[in-house]
Image 1 (cartoon, rainbow, N blue to C red):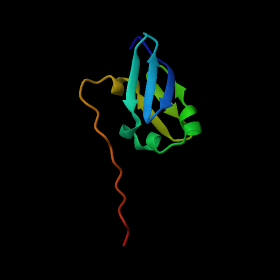
Image 2 (cartoon, rainbow, N blue to C red):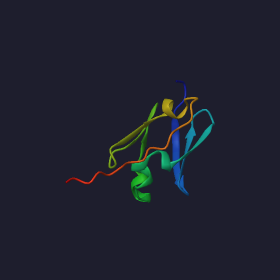
Image 3 (cartoon, helix red, strand yellow):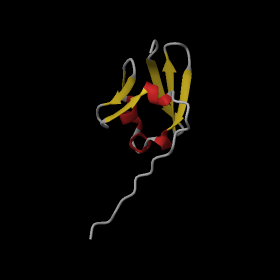
Image 4 (cartoon, one colour):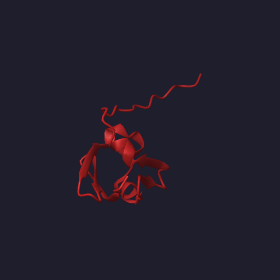
Length: 84
């Protein structure tokens, strides 16, 4: 991959990634429950690298390659099971 994530911002339940080749990707946070439930300060503490964006405090990593696949993203919902 000849491009990388250069910046990210979070607004209105969406994540916007700026790429080094000039493209901007917009992704709903609803696809990523950990990020959707994080506070603004936690979201702001990301580390972009060549192919990954990482949140150390949230223990979350997302790959740029995963954002660029041609199949639609599917929302992941976490189900809580009560213990007996």
